Structures are given as C-alpha cells and as structure tokens.
Image 1 (cartoon, rainbow over the protein chains, first blue to last red):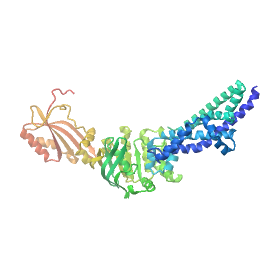
Image 2: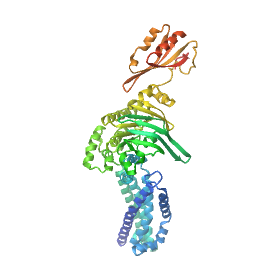
Image 3: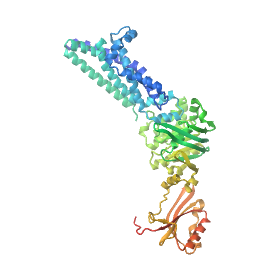
Image 4: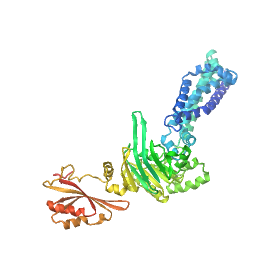
Length: 217
Length: 353
C-alpha cells in the first residue's frame, strides 16, 4: 500500500517545493526592495518621503488583510492573463507571489528598523550616498535578521501552497484533500502531514543555522 | 578652520518649537583641540553636528576649511564630509564587518582599490595598536578597542578635522585616559583640528587647548582651558569645575554660618589660587613673616597641572586682630595670587565627621 502512494507523495512533494521556491524567488526580488523602500522613506530615514511611504504602506496593508484563499480566487483573471490558465502548479505561483510580496516587505522593514540609527549617521558622516548606506550598511547589518524573517515567509508559503492545492494547484495540500479527505484515505492524509512537518522543521533549521552563521554580534 | 556664526537650530516637536541652539559663535583654529562642554540637553551634540551638516542649522553660517557648508549641494557636501572624521559615544561600528573592513569602510565608499586600501589600513591598525585584531569582529573587542577602531576609521580618509561626540563617555577612567592620549597624539602627528564634545571636565582638562561651556543653547563662557579653569565666570562653569576641584569648605567648617563680621572664635577663611611659577613661591611664609600678629592655618591644599602650568588651590584660615588681618589681605593682594575671601566661619565643636 505504501508502495502505491509513494509516487503520489514524491510528485506532490516536488510540486510543493517547486511552488515554494519559485514563488519565494520572485516575491523576494520585489519584496526585499519593497522593504527597503518602506524603511528608508519612513520619517527620519535617509530617503524620507511620507506621502510615498504612506501610499505604499496602505497598499501593503490592503493586500495583507485579504485571506489567502480569497485572494487566490479573486485574482483568477490576472492569473489567467499571466500564465494562460488558472489551474495547475504554475498558476498557483501567481497568488503565492502576490500574497508574499507585502509580507516580505514588512518583514524586511522590521529587520532594517533594528539597525542602530548611529550606524547610518556614521556612514553619512563619512559621505556615504543613500545607495551606499542601503547596500553597505543597512542590508549587511540586518542580514541575520532578514534571513530569520524570510524563513518565516517560506514556512508561510508552504502552508499557502497547500491551500493553493484546493483550486487544482497540485502539491501536498492537493493530495491530502483529494485522497485523504475526499477518498477517505487517512494514511495519505497522515503521510502528507508528516512530510509537511518535516519540511517545515528542515526549513526552520536551515534558516536558523544560516542566520546564526551570519550574525557576528 | 571652523567658523560658526549666529548658529540657530529650532526643532519642531509635538509640544511646539524647541530652540536647541540660540545663536552660537565659535572660531576654531587649525591644529587646535577645542572642547565643548555642557550638560545633556544643552545642545552640544546638535552643535557638533552642525559642523558636518548632519544637522542643518535653521540659520547662521558654517565655514569649514574655507567652505560655506550651508551652500553646498548634496554631492559637494558628501565630498566635504570626507574631510571631517567623526567618532561617537557608542562607536557605531558595523557589527557585520571585521576590524579591518570597518577601518576600510570610508575608503570603500570612495571606491579605493583593495591594494590602496591595504596601504592605508595597515598603518592605521598599527597607529591604534590593533594589528593583531584585524580579522576580529567588533563584538569581540572591549569598549576601548572599539573606540580605537572608530578613530582609525575616522582617520582613513585623511580628514583635516576630527569631531569627537562624547567619545569617552562610555569608557572607564583608565580607558578614557588612553583614548584621550591617542587623540592628543594624532592631533600632533597629523596637525588635526579636533572638536571634543563632552560632559566631563576631566576630558577638557586632559587634552583641550580651548573650551566653550554651552548651556541652554548658548555659549556661557569660552576661552583657554587654563583661564576658564582658574577663573571661571559662569555658575555652570564653576559647577563643572567643582566636580574636579571641590569648592566645599573643609569638613571642620562645613555647614556653619559664614559671616562678614568677625565672630568670637572664628577664622577668616580665604581661598587662594596660585598660577604658574607663583605656585612655587613661598607667599604664605612671607605673609606670616611680614604681617605681625596674624596666625595662618592651612585647611586645604591641592596642586594640579593644566597643560604643564602648575595650578595650586588652598584654603587658609586667618586669625588675629583686625588690623593685622587687613595687613595680610593687603599683602596678598599685591602678590600674584587670586584671593577670594569666604568670610568668618566658626569651627565645628565636634570635628568628628
């Protein structure tokens, strides 16, 4: 019986990992700069611009307040436009990315806020440009914290990707619902839950290890 | 080198406008170590930040090395700042970078090649005595070592001016001494103009040539350290100095009524300040010899040195008949000694305190 579900599990695990990695990569490319923008345009920061900060902040809050399952359905037209279909693993990546960008933005912003203001002041006193302060002071100093925060985002993505299974996204969540729930196969349900737990533990462990290695404080 | 005129800084705060600086004039000559002392909130940190425009004055003029800092564009200002090193109370080192990379930081900002960075950083490591710590991270260093890294970093861009913002306030007295010695050393070695912000008179006395006492956004008093120390005019200055040089009466007299008239059993207490070579002269012995009938009791004595000039402070008690005491006061007033008459004070009946 185990031999029968094993291929199902490995395929589903592969799909989950694919969704998480690709979503995380795309969301980070946009989300990290978003976090930098949120922090640096805030009051008293190097690129202070309150109108911009508040506008972007409101959009971020708006997206973050939509439950993922609703966001997923609500943006189906956009998903269809971008990937040509609203069903499938790749299609699930669109809502995952859109939900993760503001999440990453806020997490990175929080990390950057932890960098002592004195360091920025010191860099300014040495004639650093805003770009140099971001790349040579803020990001390197906040990196251990950013890694921790992004680990949290990845774990949230694992959970959301399982939800994406509900609209035909594939992955472990999809498997658990179709086999474990709809076909009354508790052993499949159990197996997916175990795999998810192991996956999350692994991500957390790797994140912690990397963060600790980067932290010289 | 630094010329501040009519500097005013007003902050907007939720509770209204705050006047941090209310018209400051200050001239700092090349190669000088200039101390600015004040209580926290007096505006000294704001003032030092006006020199490199980390704080832009609301009005006034800031001329640094012939450049009108107020009129510079952002990029011109960044270049001008490379001429002005700064060190901080909490060091502000990058925790993610090694000692070497921290010192190299200002050079990396100006895209210096790594070969040239090494040529610059190695001697600086040597100068501040941290050659063996190059690969360590700031968290592995003591406070004094961190400030040495801060100093080396501030010197990396060959500045003409060094601003020290409470640079020793987070350090213990021993370490403070060694950091001050280092600052004095580089001041001489590189003909560096140094501005020292502090709330500790000890720091001023140790290394500064000149001092400005700032209180409530204005300069209460300024001048050479020797003058300000030996002849303070303003209450706040006297208070700062009293931390180092107590103004209290000796224990046997403390707390007793001071009267201008002679009281039975009292002594006339005088505070005497000797300066320079006069500190060595036997003035008191001469006084006793010259003024018959005067008894002189030494109650307190302290001999100190400011920039190599001896500086003595004594409290003596005179007794005798009124005319002989007057003789003694006349004698002293003709000598080069500053006399402050405290008044007639009776000795405590019990001296056991």
